Length: 425
Ligand SMILES: Cc1ncc(COP(=O)(O)O)c(C=O)c1O
Image (tube, rainbow, N blue to C red; front, side, top):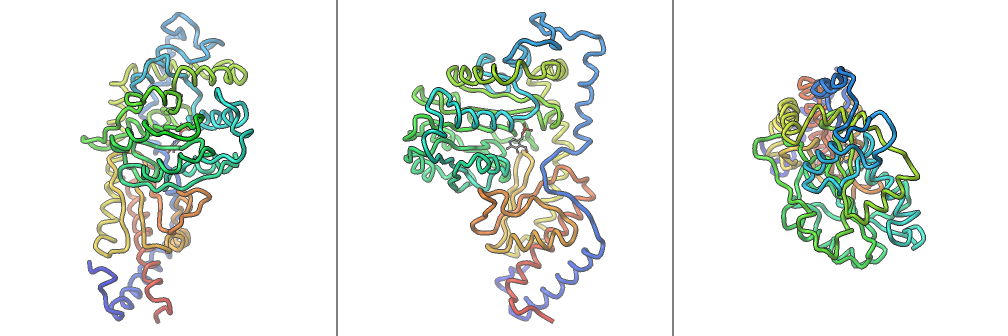
């Protein structure tokens, strides 16, 4: 297709008329499609239903002989800690298990740092604290920081991870206390941090000795292809002086059930001790029957990897449908670029500057609900009004085809509108 920038004014006007007619025809179908959140489809949830039968024999005893239904084992049951430790590449004693949500573990950790500290003066007593936010990023990280009144500092995301020149400079500010990152198949770009980025993060020299990195490894085994990205284990390259700097979280939300999975937090012995002290006031123990259910069902990392292949078989055609649609309808027009992830839950679409909001409006009016434009940036402010997060996992492939059609026609229409500010007859 000819790039819009190479078209004559007459050609642009003709294209505008054609695309506007296509858009009106799609709008007339009165579709209602929700592509706003990265959640698994019900066929994916069914993959884990076997979990619900592991107690048919009435045996709730853990490998240490303790009853999973009762109080006790505040760090989580040993076999499940071992499973998560193997997944993360750390020792079981470096892991505490949580409830069904890693987001909750992150929230509780930040709240602890703010109001009680984690072996340091509580951040809230130190003045206005800041967090580095590589973006585009995960909207719920940003919403959490905003909720706590922590100032967010934008850091550009590159295809290798956060722009480390910016990060190394920003951590010279002693009020910069932390950074949220999604190191593998990041939300929404779907990229994995390069080894060099991981090493540079591990070797940071922040001015604040209470600087903490939330290493949100939500997509650690969520590969879509036979040539998955490989993430360097940050704990393997963390110098001793930074041993308390990294706090990793993960969960089985997109391995088993998002509504009923198991989460974990892994960090240094000192950090875990402070977390344990707080937990001892907060909860007697998380849901250990669920931990046992997961461990009996998946057994080990190999069991989880088998499960992830089944997820990939469902998800890959959906990602392919979106990527093919984008290439077919937008390729060569010079108005958009997008990521082609090897895993995770998202594709990130960048359109011409200043038109993403307009694309969102066109999509909404034609019945396609997207993640709100801007949500991938702190304070919901995309400085270039360019980024759109595509979440292809939930709709069926047929619905997804319609969704991509609405999206690409909306992108073209918004661009043409910008190119023909006076409109066309
Ligand atoms: C990067 C990232 N972290 C965390 C979560 C939520 O995880 P959980 O279900 O364990 O709270 C998501 C869900 O979309 C995510 O994309």
